[in-house]
Image 1 (tube, rainbow, N blue to C red):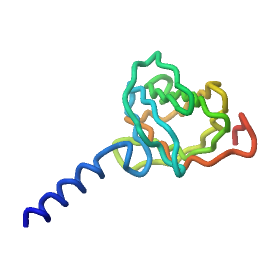
Image 2 (image 1 turned 30 degrees about the vertical axis):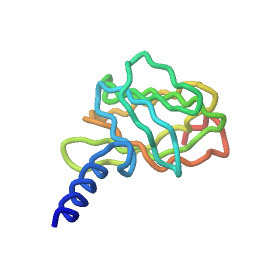
Image 3 (image 1 turned 60 degrees about the horizontal axis):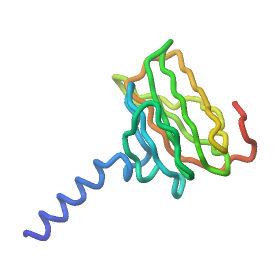
Length: 133
């Protein structure tokens, strides 16, 4: 019984972690740093808004400005495409996103919808650096 309770508690803690869940949810007003592994954000942690990514890291900030804005900087050697979902009062809405450029160059996204958060997931190495759909 004790083993079962411990297992359930561990499962609840692991699934609640933004770094281990499917994707990373960044609330409006937050800045996060993370690495990419197997297409998902890992080792995610909140950082100061003015933070720059260390080698191999990505830093993302979401703000409420003219709808929802997101700045994202990847200090990786390759560019990535990724899935971005706007999280509002109801269900998540998938939206378009530009390619995340390589070598610490910034990407700026703006959506007219107001969102409480943006969930990022499904990072894939891009064939074209700096492209927007």
